[in-house]
Image (cartoon, one colour):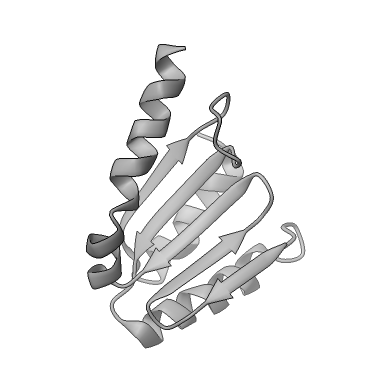
Length: 109
C-alpha cells in the first residue's frame, strides 16, 4: 500500500475513526488517485479527526482544500481525497458504492 495512505489510515485509526476504507483509483476517470473514507463517532469527533490529520500530516502534505461541517469533512491533498463522515451521513450518501463502481470500471478497461 502507498505509504502516504498508510500514514493517513494510521492517524485515523489511532484516533478512533471507524470503518476506514481506501480506494485506489489510479487510471480511472476519477479526479483523485486515492480516496480514504472513515466514520467518526459524531460531529465533534469529525472535527477532532481533521485536527489530528493536520497535525500528523503537515508539513509533508499540503492541504489544498478543506470543506468541513460537523457531519462531513472533505480534505483534498491533490491526488488523495479524505472523507470523514458521521455514521448517519456515511449511510445517507453511500460513497462506497460509487467508489467501488469507479474502481470496477477502471479494472474492466
